[in-house]
Length: 361
Image (cartoon, helix red, strand yellow):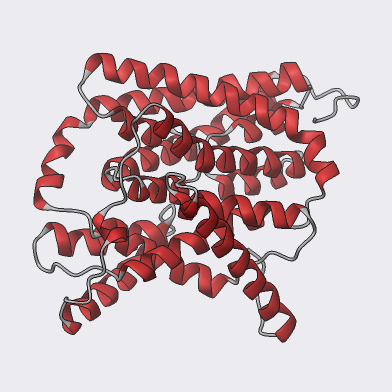
C-alpha cells in the first residue's frame, strides 16, 4: 500500500472509495446476497477502479480495520470452540499437500496454456501470500502486472463466488452474532480491555513479522479473552460491519491504475488459473469429507486459495468458525512461504531460460 500524507485531494479519494464500497455493500444486502458486505464492497470498488476512479485506502485506516476485524473474529471464540481443535490434524495435513498440488497445477496451466515463463507462472499460481509473492517476483524480474491481476481476480472471484455457491447449494448461514447484534450492554472497562489487549497483540505479531500479523494478532488477543471466559464484550455491529466494508474497499482498490484493456489481456489466464485452483481445492475437500466428518461450508472457505483476511471475513459473515478457517489459511500461507523459494530455485537451476517470445496473457 503506498505511503499516505494528508491532502484534501487524497481525502476526497478516500471518501469516494468508502462511499463506493458502502453503496456496493448496501446494494448486495438489499438483494439478499450472502456475505453482501464484503462481496458488494469488493466488487463495487474494483469496478470503479477499472473505470479509472482513484480508489484508495490510507495505510493507517487499513491497520485500524485489520485490528477491528481481528477483534470481531476472536469474539466468536468460546471454550467449547477450542475443544474442536483436536479434530483438525487430518484436514491440516491434507491442506498442506493440497497447497503444493494447487501451486504446481496452476503453474503448469499458466506455462502450458498461456505461455508464461516458469517463474511468472509459479508466482501467479501461488495460492495466497501475495505480499511475499510480489517481493520474490520483483527480485526475479517476473511479470508483476500479470501476477497482480491473476491473484486479485482470484480473490474477487472467491469473495463473490463462494457466498453465491454456498447459497445455491443451501449451505450459507445467517450472519454471526458479532455482526447481527449490537453489544452496547458491555461495560466500558471490558470494551477498553478488549481493544487494548487486541491492539497490543496485533502490533506484537506485526513486529515479529508474523504473516497477516495485524489480523491474527488482534484475533489472538480477543480470542484469549473470550475463550478464557475473561470478558463477554464485542465491538458494536456497526463497527464490525464498517470494518468489513472497508476491507472490501482495500481488496477492490488493488485494481487502481489497471486499465480494462490490460485486465482483458490477462483475464483468460486469471479465469483459467482460478478454475484449476478451485478444481484442485474441491478434490482435496472431497478427500477430507471422506475421511473425517465436517461441515462442507467450513472446508470450502478453509481450503479456498484466497487472501487470508478476506477468507476469514467470509467465515465470520457466513457463520463459519473463523478459528478453523484461520488455522488452515495460516498453514497454507506457511507452506507457500516455505515452498516458493525452493521451487523457484529448482526451476532456475533445472529449467531452460524462458523463450524471449513467450508472452503472458
